[in-house]
Length: 116
Image 1 (cartoon, helix red, strand yellow):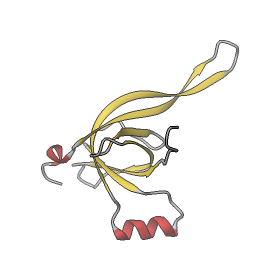
Image 2 (cartoon, rainbow, N blue to C red):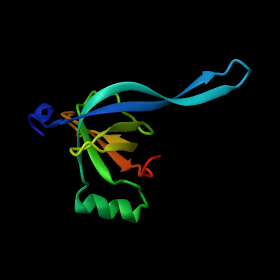
Image 3 (cartoon, one colour):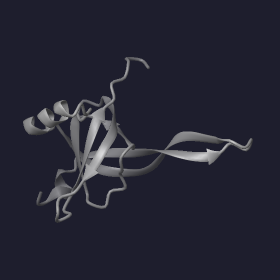
């Protein structure tokens, strides 16, 4: 993907589960924004869709990122689409080609209820 930087047309907030002591001997887990990255959100190829169906994966989109983007499995990527609709994606996995010119996050679009 030569010239990837120009193709990263969306700003995505990276949210990650963090665990802190609750002060009463337990722990509390919350989602915390840890970074903002540039990305390009695409539909998976027909082959990727078939593999996802066969493995019962929830892979609905690919997000292309710079190779050093701080994104990992379990993170949420939050942003808006071209129409201004809020979207949240859960990262299933992150892969790179043998020459790290980009990272590709395989993600699931989290559907939300209107008004909630």
